[in-house]
Length: 565
Image (cartoon, rainbow, N blue to C red):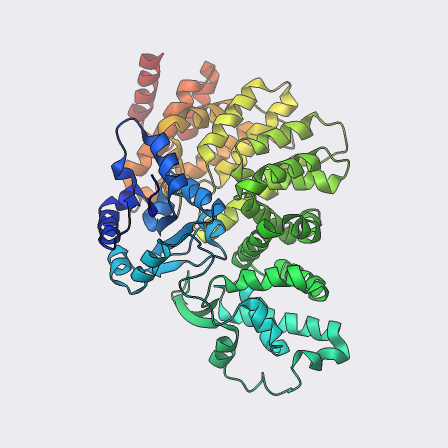
C-alpha cells in the first residue's frame, strides 16, 4: 500500500521524530517509519515502504551524522534516485561530505530543532508537497531561474560574483570576493572590446554599489559565524536558494559553450590557490555537476585534473569523483575508469589510480584501494613510486577530514579487515609491504580518543572495540615482525605510532582522564600481544610500553594471554 511519507532518521532522535509523525498524521498524511515494523521483517518492510512512499523526509541531525549505522544515507540515496527526497537539517552544523553530496543543489529546509519544524509555517508547505505526485516544483520557488537571470544580461561583476558564490558557497566573504575579482579579470581578458555586450558599460556601477545590494542582485545573503580557532566573527555568503549555484554551472554546461572554457580555467586557478575547505567545496560542486553531465564534465575537468602535476588540482578531482560515486547510476562507471587508469601505460594515470583509490573516492567502494594496489603491484609496466603516492593521498584525505571534523566517509574498520587478509595472503614479501604501509599511514593520522564534536566515528578508541579490534591488532603484530628496508620499515613505523599513542596518553592523563585513555592504549597492546606469533614479538610490544605501564599492568596482559591461549 502506498504511503504519503517515509520518515528517515537516526534512532537517537526517536522520541522527537515520534512527535513529528503525529503532527504529519494530524494533517491527513499517511506516514511510515520503522516503529511500525513487525518483528523479524525489517529488510522487506523498509524496502517495500521506501519504494512505495510518495516522499521521503530525511531528518539530518547531529545524531544522524555521528551514527555508525548509515541507514539514513542509504535511504536518502535511494530517495534521491527516485526524485522524492525532501532533506531537512535539524540543528546548526556543517553537513559532512557524504550528506552534502546527496543534498547538494536540492531544496533543503533548516530548523533549530524538531519542535521548530512542527511549529514553523513551512511545515504546512511541506505537508502539501508530500501530497503531490511531482516533486519537480519547489515549495519556495525562486523569483527567477539561473537561466532567466543570465538572460537578463546582468553586469560582468554580478556574473563573476554569482559564479564565485556558486563555486565557494559558505566560504568567508573575503575569499569569495577575491575569487569573483579573479573571474571578472579573466572574463575581461577573454572578451576584450566586447565587454559592453554583457551590460557592464557603466564602469562605476559595481564600484559604488553597496555590498548587500550586490548580494541581493544575485540572490545571495551574508551571514555570520565564529572563526574555528579564534572565535572571532566572520562573514560568509550563500545563495538564498541552495539550487542556484548548481543551476548556474549546469546552464553554462548546457547552453553557454564560449563561457565554459574560461570558467574551467578559473576553477583550476581556485583549486591551485585556495585552502582545504574551498577545495572541498569545489570538488562538491564539480561532482554534483558531473552527476548531471557525467562524460562532458569528466572529459573537460575531472580526468585532466586527475592526471595533472599539481597536487591541489588532483585532490579536487578526487573529491569530485567521490561525489559522483554517491550516485548509484555512475558508481560502476567510476570504478571502471579507475581500473583503466591502473592498467594504463601512462604513469600519470597509474598515479591517479593510486591517489583516487586511497583517497576520498576509494572510501566509497569496498576494497577498491586494495584491488587497485594489487593490480599495480602485479604490473610490470613502468615504475610508479607507490609508497610516496599512497602516503600523499592518505595525508590529504586525513588532513581534510581533520579540518572539516568529518569522518563520515570512512569505514576504517572494514579497510583494516581487508588489509589484514591481503597481508596474510600476499604472494611475496614486497607485495606484502603495501597493505602494511597503507595501514600504518592511516594509523599515523588516527587520534587516540574520539572528538565528541567530530562528525563520524574514527579513533583508536573505536578501533579497539567490536570486530575491528582483531584486524587492527593483527596488522600491528605483523608490522612489528617485519624489519623492511631503507624505504619502509614496518617495525620502526609501528613502534613510532605506538610511541605517539603513549605520548598522547600521558598528555591526556596529566589533565585527569587517566583511566579511560590508559584503557584504550592498554587494550590495543593487549590485543597485539595476543596475536604476536612468537615470544620475541610479544616481548617487543611489551618493551614498547614499559615506560607507561607498571609491571603489574604488564603481568595482567601476559596472564590474560595465557588464559586465552
